[in-house]
Image (tube, rainbow over all chains, first blue to last red):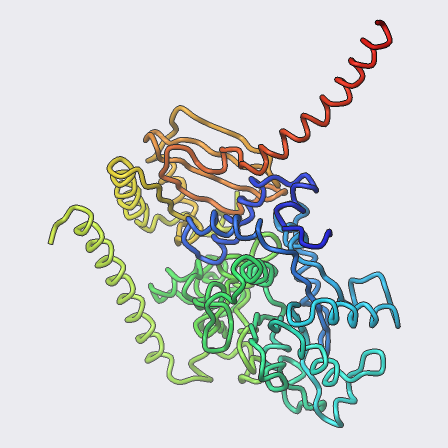
Length: 352
Length: 143
């Protein structure tokens, strides 16, 4: 890419029309629950932006996060994200290996000092000075510190990088910690999930490139656009929950009829992620739709919460009290929505 | 048929369609009075397949339909209510990527962007220029 060239100019050169960019921005804005009018602003901002340098480091991980990002993509609309970034280092995806690969990372760090985004998947081992996990003879701990120093911001993708994940599970022999326990002087965005949803990674990157700042984050530094609602909030089985219709086993009549999986251990009520709306494999399905309870994989310490098949009431308090509270909250949300609609109607007609 | 439509919950009518129609009516009144466009993102709403079909039935089809081949297919049609457009963008494999009700005179996605127009003008000139030179050359050769 020529120095100083905007993404708009780059896309034009590649024969990608502004309509395609607008369609992509509409898609991202919809995913992120931005107002529909934001899509035009995002398309224009992306057209004026420069291609973003990204360095991706993989530490104690299973490569599932990279699989999620690359394999779920269709070759047209969603792949546009790869036109917006310059993936300067990713040791699984890049063609270079060995010394040449590490040289690519150092070159990108030097040429884009203070401007590149650092993406990390996997947790960081602290035990034995990080000796449990090394790349090219350099510990993950050392490489993270060295690479984060010149980064604009850090994006921790996957539950391992965000919260420690499975390496952090008891007894945690490698002393695994999340990125945020090592890097404390840079903005960190967590996109958790095991693996994280591809659209959440790509959408967050697109937002950062377009607007030059992170989207609004929750208390765990996750973009609220993708982690603002629980799985339960948007679950299509929610009507059965409201009616008290629960599957009692995975092969009973209730399960076959698609009733709520709460009593089979579903962690949907306490898990914040977009699986129920964005779904997986190009929007085909998500675990609950496939008949399995949510494991809660986007939450801290999900592996050590007392069992995937134990209902929340067992691990977190009495079932009756919890259900009562949730039902009451549901009713309150419904009442508030109706009140807002009435207020809007009054406002538009001048009625007081 | 989507997996959701096959599920029992997919066939439920939640009643949200009436609220969406009320919102469209407000946006349309505003467009008529001020010329200000508005939009509703259907994917942000908890619509079941039955709700979506009900909304489509209520809005009907109007005078304009367009098909776009832009990073996958897109369909745009004006509903039976002038100024109310249904915009459905699909991914390459046909899944719906986004779906919006736009309340506007013409949806932006149908209009050619100034940058694309500029690039198109350049491309057309590039095609014409060698022919002109060639034509001049022929004239010179003949004279």
